[in-house]
Image (cartoon, rainbow, N blue to C red):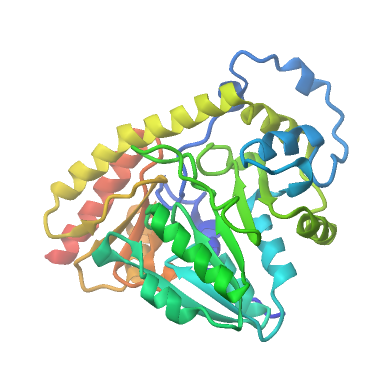
Length: 371
Protein backbone atom coordinates (compact mmCIF):
# COMPACT_ATOMS: atom_id res chain seq x y z
CA UNK A 1 0.00 0.00 0.00
CA UNK A 2 1.57 3.29 -1.12
CA UNK A 3 0.14 6.33 0.65
CA UNK A 4 0.13 9.72 -1.00
CA UNK A 5 1.13 12.60 1.28
CA UNK A 6 -1.84 13.87 3.28
CA UNK A 7 -1.17 17.47 2.31
CA UNK A 8 -3.22 19.27 4.93
CA UNK A 9 -2.02 17.14 7.84
CA UNK A 10 1.60 17.44 6.67
CA UNK A 11 1.17 21.22 6.45
CA UNK A 12 -0.29 21.46 9.95
CA UNK A 13 2.06 18.96 11.54
CA UNK A 14 5.12 20.82 10.26
CA UNK A 15 4.01 24.39 10.95
CA UNK A 16 1.14 24.74 13.45
CA UNK A 17 3.49 25.04 16.43
CA UNK A 18 6.00 27.29 14.65
CA UNK A 19 3.81 30.28 13.76
CA UNK A 20 2.53 33.12 15.93
CA UNK A 21 -1.08 32.79 14.76
CA UNK A 22 -2.41 29.36 13.91
CA UNK A 23 -5.67 29.78 12.01
CA UNK A 24 -5.42 26.36 10.38
CA UNK A 25 -7.32 24.45 13.07
CA UNK A 26 -10.93 23.38 12.70
CA UNK A 27 -12.26 23.57 16.25
CA UNK A 28 -12.67 26.12 19.01
CA UNK A 29 -9.72 26.63 21.33
CA UNK A 30 -9.49 23.66 23.69
CA UNK A 31 -10.75 23.32 27.20
CA UNK A 32 -8.28 23.01 30.04
CA UNK A 33 -8.43 20.08 32.42
CA UNK A 34 -9.70 22.45 35.11
CA UNK A 35 -12.55 23.60 32.83
CA UNK A 36 -13.48 20.05 31.93
CA UNK A 37 -13.55 18.85 35.54
CA UNK A 38 -15.50 21.92 36.65
CA UNK A 39 -16.58 20.96 40.18
CA UNK A 40 -15.58 17.29 39.87
CA UNK A 41 -12.64 16.22 42.07
CA UNK A 42 -9.19 15.67 40.62
CA UNK A 43 -8.15 13.04 43.19
CA UNK A 44 -9.59 9.98 41.39
CA UNK A 45 -7.44 10.77 38.37
CA UNK A 46 -4.29 11.21 40.47
CA UNK A 47 -4.69 7.69 41.86
CA UNK A 48 -5.50 6.06 38.50
CA UNK A 49 -3.08 3.29 37.39
CA UNK A 50 -1.57 4.18 34.01
CA UNK A 51 -1.93 0.77 32.46
CA UNK A 52 -3.77 -0.49 29.40
CA UNK A 53 -7.44 0.31 29.22
CA UNK A 54 -10.19 -1.91 27.79
CA UNK A 55 -9.10 -1.95 24.16
CA UNK A 56 -12.48 -1.27 22.57
CA UNK A 57 -13.34 1.33 25.23
CA UNK A 58 -14.59 0.68 28.74
CA UNK A 59 -18.22 -0.38 29.02
CA UNK A 60 -18.96 2.92 30.79
CA UNK A 61 -17.62 4.98 27.89
CA UNK A 62 -19.31 2.86 25.25
CA UNK A 63 -22.60 3.17 27.14
CA UNK A 64 -22.26 6.98 27.09
CA UNK A 65 -21.60 6.92 23.33
CA UNK A 66 -24.34 4.40 22.53
CA UNK A 67 -26.84 6.61 24.37
CA UNK A 68 -26.29 9.27 21.68
CA UNK A 69 -27.58 6.91 18.96
CA UNK A 70 -31.09 5.49 19.52
CA UNK A 71 -31.08 1.72 19.21
CA UNK A 72 -27.30 1.38 19.59
CA UNK A 73 -25.78 -0.76 22.35
CA UNK A 74 -22.30 -1.03 23.83
CA UNK A 75 -21.61 -3.71 21.21
CA UNK A 76 -22.40 -1.20 18.44
CA UNK A 77 -19.50 1.04 19.55
CA UNK A 78 -15.72 0.91 19.09
CA UNK A 79 -13.62 3.59 20.81
CA UNK A 80 -10.61 4.76 18.79
CA UNK A 81 -7.74 7.21 18.95
CA UNK A 82 -9.62 10.12 17.45
CA UNK A 83 -12.11 10.09 14.58
CA UNK A 84 -9.13 9.76 12.23
CA UNK A 85 -8.48 6.21 13.42
CA UNK A 86 -12.19 5.47 13.18
CA UNK A 87 -12.18 6.55 9.52
CA UNK A 88 -8.99 4.58 8.90
CA UNK A 89 -10.35 1.35 10.36
CA UNK A 90 -13.59 1.63 8.39
CA UNK A 91 -11.86 2.17 5.04
CA UNK A 92 -9.12 -0.37 5.74
CA UNK A 93 -11.68 -3.03 6.55
CA UNK A 94 -14.28 -2.36 3.86
CA UNK A 95 -12.24 -1.42 0.77
CA UNK A 96 -10.38 -3.85 -1.49
CA UNK A 97 -8.38 -3.24 -4.69
CA UNK A 98 -10.74 -2.54 -7.58
CA UNK A 99 -13.59 -1.34 -5.37
CA UNK A 100 -15.36 1.94 -6.07
CA UNK A 101 -16.28 4.54 -3.49
CA UNK A 102 -18.36 7.67 -3.98
CA UNK A 103 -17.07 10.60 -1.95
CA UNK A 104 -18.60 13.97 -1.12
CA UNK A 105 -16.24 16.83 -2.08
CA UNK A 106 -14.92 19.10 -0.74
CA UNK A 107 -14.11 17.00 2.29
CA UNK A 108 -11.44 16.09 4.79
CA UNK A 109 -9.20 14.17 2.42
CA UNK A 110 -8.21 11.23 4.62
CA UNK A 111 -10.75 8.86 3.08
CA UNK A 112 -9.82 10.00 -0.44
CA UNK A 113 -6.14 9.20 0.17
CA UNK A 114 -6.73 5.90 1.95
CA UNK A 115 -9.14 4.55 -0.67
CA UNK A 116 -6.71 5.37 -3.48
CA UNK A 117 -3.84 3.76 -1.57
CA UNK A 118 -5.89 0.59 -1.17
CA UNK A 119 -6.45 0.41 -4.93
CA UNK A 120 -10.01 1.71 -5.06
CA UNK A 121 -11.36 4.23 -7.54
CA UNK A 122 -12.85 7.38 -6.02
CA UNK A 123 -15.85 8.93 -7.77
CA UNK A 124 -16.79 12.40 -6.48
CA UNK A 125 -20.05 14.18 -6.04
CA UNK A 126 -19.81 17.84 -5.13
CA UNK A 127 -21.26 20.41 -2.84
CA UNK A 128 -22.09 23.44 -4.98
CA UNK A 129 -21.20 26.91 -3.83
CA UNK A 130 -23.84 28.45 -6.12
CA UNK A 131 -26.41 26.45 -4.10
CA UNK A 132 -24.99 27.46 -0.71
CA UNK A 133 -22.90 24.28 -0.58
CA UNK A 134 -25.87 21.96 -1.07
CA UNK A 135 -25.03 18.57 -2.62
CA UNK A 136 -25.49 18.03 -6.34
CA UNK A 137 -27.91 15.12 -6.05
CA UNK A 138 -28.07 14.62 -9.82
CA UNK A 139 -24.29 14.16 -9.82
CA UNK A 140 -24.64 11.74 -6.90
CA UNK A 141 -27.17 9.68 -8.85
CA UNK A 142 -24.78 9.51 -11.81
CA UNK A 143 -21.82 8.63 -9.59
CA UNK A 144 -23.39 5.67 -7.78
CA UNK A 145 -23.33 2.41 -9.71
CA UNK A 146 -23.65 -1.30 -9.10
CA UNK A 147 -19.90 -1.27 -8.39
CA UNK A 148 -20.17 1.26 -5.57
CA UNK A 149 -18.98 -0.32 -2.32
CA UNK A 150 -19.21 2.76 -0.11
CA UNK A 151 -20.60 6.30 -0.08
CA UNK A 152 -18.72 8.65 2.26
CA UNK A 153 -20.02 11.99 3.51
CA UNK A 154 -19.00 14.57 6.10
CA UNK A 155 -21.93 16.25 7.85
CA UNK A 156 -21.59 18.99 9.03
CA UNK A 157 -19.05 19.48 6.32
CA UNK A 158 -15.34 20.23 6.50
CA UNK A 159 -14.31 22.71 5.03
CA UNK A 160 -17.55 24.54 4.15
CA UNK A 161 -19.47 24.25 7.43
CA UNK A 162 -22.60 23.29 5.47
CA UNK A 163 -25.27 21.02 6.94
CA UNK A 164 -27.32 18.60 4.86
CA UNK A 165 -31.08 19.04 4.85
CA UNK A 166 -33.29 16.10 5.77
CA UNK A 167 -34.32 15.51 2.14
CA UNK A 168 -30.65 15.52 1.06
CA UNK A 169 -29.77 12.98 3.75
CA UNK A 170 -32.62 10.78 2.58
CA UNK A 171 -31.45 11.04 -1.05
CA UNK A 172 -27.96 9.90 -0.02
CA UNK A 173 -29.40 7.00 1.96
CA UNK A 174 -31.57 5.94 -0.97
CA UNK A 175 -28.57 6.06 -3.31
CA UNK A 176 -26.67 3.76 -0.94
CA UNK A 177 -29.65 1.43 -0.58
CA UNK A 178 -30.11 1.10 -4.34
CA UNK A 179 -26.48 0.06 -4.74
CA UNK A 180 -26.37 -2.07 -1.59
CA UNK A 181 -23.42 0.09 -0.54
CA UNK A 182 -22.19 1.02 2.91
CA UNK A 183 -22.68 4.61 4.01
CA UNK A 184 -19.90 6.16 6.09
CA UNK A 185 -20.91 9.43 7.78
CA UNK A 186 -18.21 11.51 9.45
CA UNK A 187 -20.25 13.51 11.99
CA UNK A 188 -17.39 14.97 14.01
CA UNK A 189 -18.76 18.55 13.80
CA UNK A 190 -22.16 17.58 15.18
CA UNK A 191 -22.80 19.88 18.15
CA UNK A 192 -20.78 22.80 16.77
CA UNK A 193 -23.73 24.50 15.05
CA UNK A 194 -23.84 28.30 15.34
CA UNK A 195 -27.59 28.87 15.30
CA UNK A 196 -29.36 25.56 14.79
CA UNK A 197 -30.05 22.43 16.88
CA UNK A 198 -27.55 19.56 16.79
CA UNK A 199 -27.33 18.08 13.31
CA UNK A 200 -29.34 14.85 12.96
CA UNK A 201 -27.27 11.70 12.60
CA UNK A 202 -27.44 9.23 9.73
CA UNK A 203 -27.68 6.51 12.38
CA UNK A 204 -30.93 4.60 12.11
CA UNK A 205 -31.72 5.69 8.55
CA UNK A 206 -30.26 2.57 6.92
CA UNK A 207 -28.95 -0.80 8.08
CA UNK A 208 -25.50 -0.40 6.48
CA UNK A 209 -24.44 2.86 8.14
CA UNK A 210 -21.15 3.55 9.91
CA UNK A 211 -20.84 6.72 12.01
CA UNK A 212 -17.51 8.25 12.97
CA UNK A 213 -17.27 10.98 15.57
CA UNK A 214 -15.10 12.13 18.46
CA UNK A 215 -14.27 14.75 21.05
CA UNK A 216 -11.87 16.88 19.01
CA UNK A 217 -14.16 19.37 17.24
CA UNK A 218 -17.46 20.26 18.88
CA UNK A 219 -16.15 19.30 22.34
CA UNK A 220 -12.85 21.18 22.12
CA UNK A 221 -10.95 18.20 23.54
CA UNK A 222 -8.54 17.15 20.77
CA UNK A 223 -5.77 16.31 23.24
CA UNK A 224 -7.75 13.40 24.69
CA UNK A 225 -7.54 11.62 21.30
CA UNK A 226 -10.94 9.98 21.75
CA UNK A 227 -13.04 9.03 18.74
CA UNK A 228 -15.54 6.31 17.99
CA UNK A 229 -17.24 4.17 15.40
CA UNK A 230 -20.92 3.22 15.64
CA UNK A 231 -22.02 0.43 13.30
CA UNK A 232 -23.87 -2.91 13.26
CA UNK A 233 -22.42 -5.07 16.04
CA UNK A 234 -21.10 -7.77 13.68
CA UNK A 235 -19.08 -5.16 11.80
CA UNK A 236 -17.87 -3.55 15.03
CA UNK A 237 -16.51 -6.94 16.16
CA UNK A 238 -14.43 -7.17 12.97
CA UNK A 239 -13.27 -3.56 13.23
CA UNK A 240 -12.17 -4.16 16.82
CA UNK A 241 -9.95 -6.98 15.54
CA UNK A 242 -8.42 -4.47 13.10
CA UNK A 243 -7.86 -2.07 16.00
CA UNK A 244 -5.45 -4.69 17.39
CA UNK A 245 -3.15 -3.87 14.47
CA UNK A 246 -3.24 -0.09 14.92
CA UNK A 247 -3.27 1.71 18.27
CA UNK A 248 -4.78 -1.15 20.34
CA UNK A 249 -6.40 1.17 22.89
CA UNK A 250 -6.81 4.71 24.17
CA UNK A 251 -5.27 5.66 27.52
CA UNK A 252 -7.20 5.10 30.75
CA UNK A 253 -7.10 8.79 31.68
CA UNK A 254 -8.58 9.74 28.31
CA UNK A 255 -11.26 7.07 28.68
CA UNK A 256 -12.28 8.36 32.11
CA UNK A 257 -12.27 12.01 31.06
CA UNK A 258 -14.31 11.13 27.97
CA UNK A 259 -16.88 9.41 30.22
CA UNK A 260 -17.08 12.62 32.20
CA UNK A 261 -17.41 14.83 29.09
CA UNK A 262 -20.24 12.67 27.74
CA UNK A 263 -22.43 12.77 30.83
CA UNK A 264 -25.49 14.81 29.85
CA UNK A 265 -24.77 17.84 32.12
CA UNK A 266 -21.13 18.13 31.03
CA UNK A 267 -21.99 17.53 27.39
CA UNK A 268 -24.55 20.34 27.43
CA UNK A 269 -22.10 22.64 29.17
CA UNK A 270 -19.30 21.87 26.69
CA UNK A 271 -21.50 22.31 23.63
CA UNK A 272 -22.84 25.57 25.08
CA UNK A 273 -19.25 26.78 25.42
CA UNK A 274 -18.47 25.82 21.82
CA UNK A 275 -21.51 27.65 20.48
CA UNK A 276 -20.80 30.70 22.61
CA UNK A 277 -17.29 30.95 21.16
CA UNK A 278 -18.62 30.56 17.61
CA UNK A 279 -21.32 33.19 18.12
CA UNK A 280 -18.91 35.66 19.69
CA UNK A 281 -16.14 35.16 17.12
CA UNK A 282 -18.11 34.92 13.90
CA UNK A 283 -19.07 38.64 13.88
CA UNK A 284 -15.34 39.46 14.05
CA UNK A 285 -14.86 37.49 10.83
CA UNK A 286 -17.90 39.09 9.19
CA UNK A 287 -16.70 42.58 10.08
CA UNK A 288 -13.25 41.81 8.68
CA UNK A 289 -14.72 40.60 5.37
CA UNK A 290 -16.94 43.70 5.18
CA UNK A 291 -13.91 45.92 5.80
CA UNK A 292 -12.18 44.35 2.79
CA UNK A 293 -14.77 44.63 0.01
CA UNK A 294 -14.03 42.66 -3.10
CA UNK A 295 -11.32 40.54 -1.48
CA UNK A 296 -13.35 37.61 -0.18
CA UNK A 297 -16.63 35.79 -0.71
CA UNK A 298 -18.04 33.56 1.99
CA UNK A 299 -21.12 31.37 2.23
CA UNK A 300 -21.74 31.59 6.00
CA UNK A 301 -20.85 28.29 7.68
CA UNK A 302 -23.70 26.72 9.63
CA UNK A 303 -21.41 24.61 11.83
CA UNK A 304 -17.82 24.24 12.88
CA UNK A 305 -15.21 26.87 13.61
CA UNK A 306 -14.16 27.00 9.95
CA UNK A 307 -14.80 29.51 7.18
CA UNK A 308 -14.12 28.56 3.58
CA UNK A 309 -13.39 31.81 1.79
CA UNK A 310 -12.94 32.39 -1.92
CA UNK A 311 -10.48 35.21 -2.58
CA UNK A 312 -10.11 37.48 -5.60
CA UNK A 313 -6.33 37.79 -6.01
CA UNK A 314 -4.57 36.04 -8.89
CA UNK A 315 -2.30 33.91 -6.75
CA UNK A 316 -2.35 30.16 -6.17
CA UNK A 317 -3.77 29.20 -2.78
CA UNK A 318 -0.70 27.20 -1.70
CA UNK A 319 1.56 30.06 -2.73
CA UNK A 320 -0.62 32.49 -0.79
CA UNK A 321 -0.65 30.26 2.29
CA UNK A 322 3.14 30.00 2.17
CA UNK A 323 3.41 33.75 1.84
CA UNK A 324 1.21 34.22 4.91
CA UNK A 325 3.24 31.66 6.81
CA UNK A 326 6.67 33.03 5.90
CA UNK A 327 5.96 36.77 5.90
CA UNK A 328 3.21 37.09 8.50
CA UNK A 329 3.66 33.98 10.70
CA UNK A 330 -0.01 33.07 10.13
CA UNK A 331 -1.03 29.54 9.21
CA UNK A 332 -4.17 28.87 7.18
CA UNK A 333 -5.20 25.93 4.99
CA UNK A 334 -4.98 26.48 1.22
CA UNK A 335 -7.89 25.40 -0.93
CA UNK A 336 -5.47 23.22 -2.91
CA UNK A 337 -5.60 20.79 0.02
CA UNK A 338 -9.27 20.23 -0.86
CA UNK A 339 -8.63 20.20 -4.62
CA UNK A 340 -9.96 23.78 -5.02
CA UNK A 341 -7.64 26.69 -5.82
CA UNK A 342 -8.44 30.31 -4.84
CA UNK A 343 -9.92 29.31 -1.48
CA UNK A 344 -8.58 29.51 2.06
CA UNK A 345 -9.93 27.69 5.09
CA UNK A 346 -9.63 29.93 8.12
CA UNK A 347 -10.33 28.93 11.71
CA UNK A 348 -12.44 31.45 13.60
CA UNK A 349 -12.43 29.47 16.86
CA UNK A 350 -9.27 30.71 18.60
CA UNK A 351 -9.27 33.25 21.43
CA UNK A 352 -10.53 36.58 20.00
CA UNK A 353 -7.17 38.37 20.34
CA UNK A 354 -5.49 35.68 18.27
CA UNK A 355 -8.23 35.74 15.65
CA UNK A 356 -8.19 39.53 15.23
CA UNK A 357 -4.39 39.71 15.03
CA UNK A 358 -4.21 36.86 12.52
CA UNK A 359 -6.92 38.38 10.32
CA UNK A 360 -5.15 41.74 10.40
CA UNK A 361 -1.97 40.13 9.07
CA UNK A 362 -3.89 38.34 6.31
CA UNK A 363 -5.44 41.67 5.38
CA UNK A 364 -2.01 43.30 5.09
CA UNK A 365 -0.81 40.65 2.68
CA UNK A 366 -3.98 40.74 0.57
CA UNK A 367 -3.85 44.52 0.26
CA UNK A 368 -0.17 44.39 -0.66
CA UNK A 369 -1.01 41.91 -3.41
CA UNK A 370 -3.56 44.35 -4.80
CA UNK A 371 -0.96 47.08 -4.97
